[in-house]
Length: 194
Image: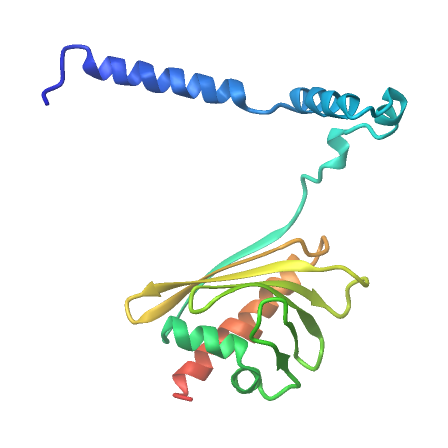
């Protein structure tokens, strides 16, 4: 079907209208607060109680640190996934320190002589590992999220790694630890042919 004169403009205008509609549907803090107030008042929530728990922009952190690393390893996604989840392989990767790893979602893990521990939140074989991850030096109950995504890079594996939610000021130490204790260790492990 050949475009009619002005056809592109009509498509553009339609997109602009759609974008304008989407923009008008975005939730602003004020709209959210008003909606929340409407819900609470509809539930019979007294206004004095709503006023006792106001939502403030100071409640939102804007200075969170995170780590994003991308690493290519000379191994298949299956081998990388297994090396991270099999306690015997992980011990070989890391030099033999005490390691316990459950291969189940919700299962616990501890490694590096119990210096690191947590639980698996999401496991998709050969594709993704997501962990609630903590250092034993952190305050009790403090967990971060470590996410490993595995992508094909020819016959190699590209790990897209993100670590978020850890205590402020820990990024440099953690980034160096991931590089030395995971990526370089895995690289040596796979190069050794084990």
